[in-house]
Amino acid sequence: MALTLAEQLDLAIKVGGLLLAALGAVVGAARYLDEQRQNRETRRDEQEKDRELRREELAWRKTQFIYELAQNFDSDEHYRRALQMILVRSHLPEGSSLSRFLAGASLDQLSASEKDARYDIDRYLDFFDRLHSFAMELHSLNPADIRCFQWYVTTVSDTPELRAYAEREGYKDVLALADEFRKLAPEATIPHAMSAMVPPS
Image 1 (cartoon, one colour):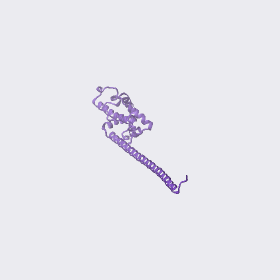
Image 2: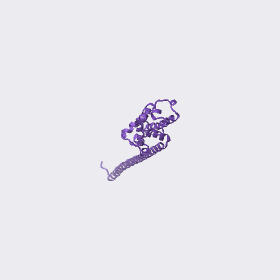
Image 3: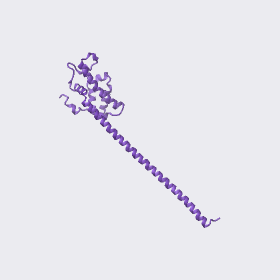
Image 4: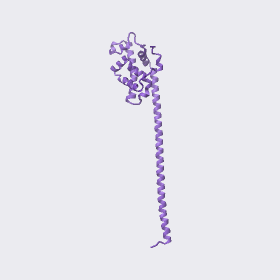
């Protein structure tokens, strides 16, 4: 049976309404998806900015920590005396030598000044032993971060009396750190501040 004009108009209106509703739903869904995408991009951007800020803050803290380490090392009298004994054999106990007070003799066999000298050397090696822990165990630093100490550490390894003492007295990690430094730069040069302490050849 044919539809009357009125019925045809009514049907057309209903179909049009359904189409408009469907189109509105599609547009709404597309708008919702676009908003969600923009929100995800915004969150990613914010997260990346947060990560970058954290990286910058960590780098600054690491730099500050290494600077403070270097300052403490430069100003510590024990380290200074140990370095002078190693480099130019000054500040040695009277009538003694590195090979004597770093030998396997017990402390009872050393004079008071020799005990003090060995204590200075122990403090010196303890410092680099802690550096090894930071770089090779905790990984809060890496050898490249602390290359300002490279020359000092490799000098320990290259000084026969010190190397033997380190191997015997539990400072092998200091020697291991020297090996790590050599992988970075085989030729370590003397720090400018220490060059005046080295006698001319």
